[in-house]
Length: 501
Image (cartoon, rainbow, N blue to C red; front, side, top):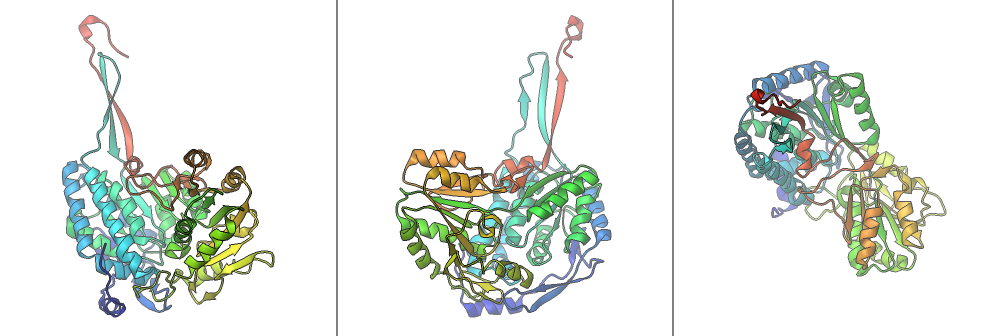
């Protein structure tokens, strides 16, 4: 992890940054043909820079260059060890420029610099390195076809991949997608969220410096109708990998159905439960995990623990610890290293989160609940009915809803009564009960006595409306960027008259 600088030093770095202002197409920065896109600092509402964004003509050009590079084999047909070496150089350049990337990410997204420096950037570099190292270690298979035939099952790069990114983890989600996609030999076109384009554009420049050929990695800033939809509908895009809202994810399924039936992988929303049973131990530690899960990244996290489902026997002492922990979470300037909660992404999203802060007289506000511009401190609501909008809808802000239950079975039933199924947490001192609960919960990742998402070696994605078509992270992520091909070889002796059909 990087050592943190002072607030003044981060401010000085921010003032000296050269921010990218154009799309990255065919190996160089080029002005897009769309409207000017103003990138705003969420913490101050002040413009950072103007980027000339892209439109459908730019999408056509980028796809043409991506297909050209793919078919020429300048990347796709290179030996896996060559691709590994280039991607490792890419990761080293990310590390060399990590502080610049961290400050740029904080300015663009409102994220605390301490998280950018100590979590987002290091994990992005680790993801790139991890998948790079896997490039020449993934073996194909041979099927049990008998002595008269050989059946080989091989992975082949799928072709032109579009990666459509969210604004809450701009660089980390980029790394999660491009690392396995590039390792497989694909050409990748990235559409960053219009609110957070800066680090993606800088990454494209670093990739070129590392040796990725022209057309293999391109970045098209712009909004959904101008860039996202044309990518989703493009007949020469072979796959879309999307992270974002469930509503937008649905659109990409429609785009695929209306065009070339391209492969679509979605990682969407969540309304994630943390279940605390009556035998949970070390309640202060439990509270620490729950608070971290609910408020990390300002709650702008698809895996945020936004529902606390707690047994009535331990509710009161646990809430005392939670309220005390909430007071430790400092809200303020994202470039101040003491800040733990920065700004929400923009005024529109802040207004959406604010609409949940007056839930009704029967619901108690234990802490927080007051919006200050784009800033909202840790907020906890108690006595929330399981069917209330606070307990049902994805707020995507630092809001924790407390639901009281009388048994494990009741808690699991409420936890599963959701359109989402991304993550869940279970807190109990009974090992069998923990495993039973983990197996019963309909979620892609279940943690026991902690909050977390696993790590780069474990698949990340969800059940139900939280995901579709594949998983990020782990070796499983490589599968979604490849096609499986069977090669059947007849080994029978024609002279014997015994041929395999």
